[in-house]
Length: 364
Image (cartoon, rainbow, N blue to C red):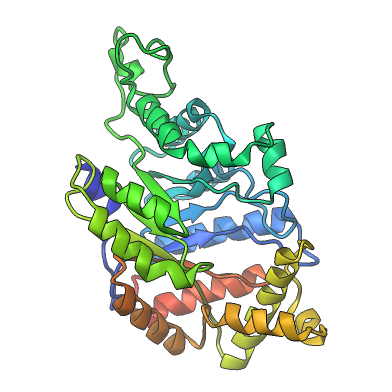
């Protein structure tokens, strides 16, 4: 199996491209983080059974409604409940961590689930500036983002265990990792987690293209930049040992319900959660009833309308049509769906409906 084979997904049913899942491990009002993580297990098992290609968890911090501060821990948990689906980070925020730590964590995950682990990397903090400063133990936050290419190169060296002679890290090894194969009697897995670059603007798009890496774009919160970033990625792409042609997925907010009215109620609640986050009041995802009773200011209402314009929602047929249109407009090689709602049951039902709409496989 080549590196490209571990990246490219298979198309099932009538879907235009492979479908995958992005899980923010959202916590609704009246629910606990344990509830949210139990939903993640249910979703991962559903995604595997219905033919979704990969299941990613995103790193966020200091957000009461998002319980995904430790992607590696969550992925290890999900690995115990799945057998085939690819598991990964969408993403780990590289400037928040020492490259060696990430290499060790994902080497451990690879040992737990051989050939199933993706390492998606972002350069944003995944939180506000004060929290980022606490994570990084520095207030020079721009320095971390500016150093991203160097941090990426260091992480890749640790993953491949190939620092050159004379490098200060030449005798430092990420374990589990390739060094084990060079020890007496050592046998090491042939797999190494593929590295993806994530982005919401042009920086990572260009870098991913220049390095010949797969690229994931955050369409779900930066829709206006999607097509320019994908164009830049494709224009910048240089074939590598990883890929001989560009491969780009986009994250898409998509929520299917049994009737259109319920979809509107659910996405209004998710939008209220974003209003609070963007105005410095992060909290748990409110109930639809709370959102319906909320007195939105004109500015907040404008934000909600703009935000929900990029959320594909409605009945299963409406969501399928919206996803088909989006894929045609962007040329994305894969669609990674994130369903944001107050209740875990609503999120699970959404993926079931979308899988049915596309005729995805049903569990044996």
